[in-house]
Image (cartoon, rainbow, N blue to C red; front, side):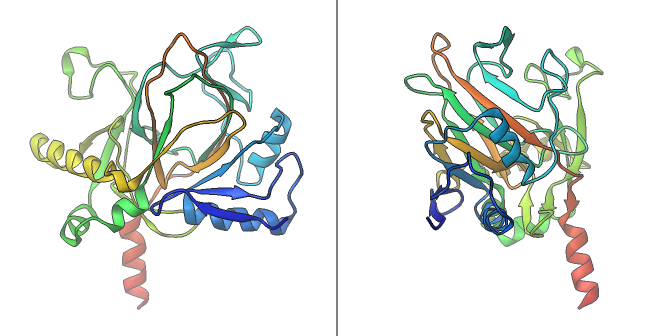
Length: 284
């Protein structure tokens, strides 16, 4: 059966029809999926009955594994996400809703991609949201794009405090500074690198101006036409581009089980889009 791609919303995402991921892909099939993934940012495969080994094999088509950091599941290519135990080990990730973010934005090499299989789900809630950071950049007013191109942004990862909260500041909170506009490593497309959960400050701007600009950018990223909300079904398998999209989660009843099986692909240091523009202008 030929592979078919059915867009989820105009801004991002496609359902892939015609593949059983228990079967290995040949080079042509892998290339077809890679091109679609770069185009859509999120690929959804319904009704997959894949094993952990199948998931690992599929993950390798797109890059090298990023192993979970710390905890009892360290040095394992598989990470379970949820509110239950697997083989006596608690699944990872806290309960409740989670704001849009990019995994690893607070480090030097943000995650390239994540892949998730839905195993057990609550009756409702626990949906995943994805926002296109390529479309977000493209639809910004030209004056805003020009303003943010030379800027850098600092991220941190602490759900309880902010970096500016000096009374509760902890030196072990990871943080890192990246360009506010990055170039996609495979396509060169400009991406707005910002999110509500982890963005802390625009480097070099007064605090009030930084807060105002971050709020403006996050509101733009989260415009309804830019966000796809996925209501999971058991057997759904999704791969998403962590640099080209931001993702989040809606709340769900903690008394009901939500369990996902995840693999993660190692990323690289983001490329400032301003550098690619300068190179292109020089070459022209």
